Amino acid sequence: MSSTYAPPVPAIAAAVEPSPSAVSWGAIFAGALAAATLTLTLMLLGSGLGLTMASPWAGESASITTFAVSTVIWLVIVQWLSAGFGGYLTGRLRTKRVGVHSDETFFRDTAHGFMAWAVATLLVAGMLGSAMSSAVGTGVRAASNVASGAAMGASAGAAANAGSGSATDAVSYFVDTLFRPADPARLAAPAGEGDAAAVAQASRILTASAAAGEVSAADRAYLGQLVAVRTGLSPAEATERVNAVLAQAEAAKVKAQKAADTARKAGALFALLGALSLLVGAFVAGVAAAMGGRQRDDDEALYLGMSR
Image (cartoon, rainbow, N blue to C red):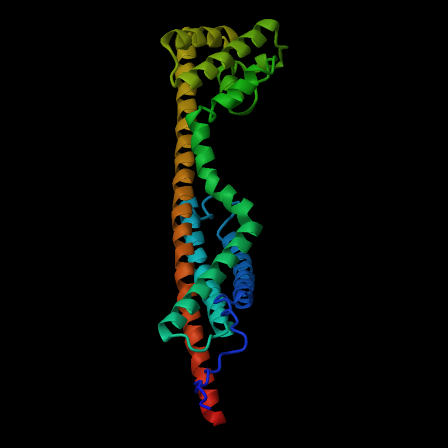
């Protein structure tokens, strides 16, 4: 009786388990927490150094451009150190899969470093997001305020809406200068309804002129008449005072525009170079993670060689 030979069936693994995930979230979160903690520490140090650049005394504080550039340089340093530290730690802690090609290992180490940087950036942005948004938006808000005439018109509007002869803020100074009496003894005399009406009219003229960007010839002549009646000056002297005060108001407006433009440029520079610092941090995190992974592999190879 013949029997049919059956070749032996090769042994197959009893249970073919799916390959584990290539992402080591534990290493990513560990590196991200380390990077975020170092970032906060360095940011506090930078805040302390930044306060040394500010001074309430005139001429002793750094300009806003210098302050912005210094801040961005410090942000690059912070990104370099924190991203490098977090990325290297992630690469060292990541579990290397057996049987993976060296090129794939390099890619995975780099990707883990990038992921650690991304998580750390989100953590820091969540804690400091409002402050950063305020800093970036300062220049935009200042520029829009000047563009809408707020440098002079807003304070003038407040004076006109007050309903009394006492103006406020910047326009009040110009109105007081217009109606400053030639004889200081006139200050002791009580102001009448005519004086209050003159102040209100002058305030409205200055407000409208600020919105229009210039004072019309008719308004300029009428202001001269008001000043002459209120102060006792001659028409020529009153006109000269009106021209001087309007020149001061224009100079103040130009100064406010220059300050707003400087703030706008500093805000734009801060935003652009801040984004550049983040890109630097992402690159450094990936490179540091690859270096950490290589050191991990070298240490493992050395340990295996010594254990044989």
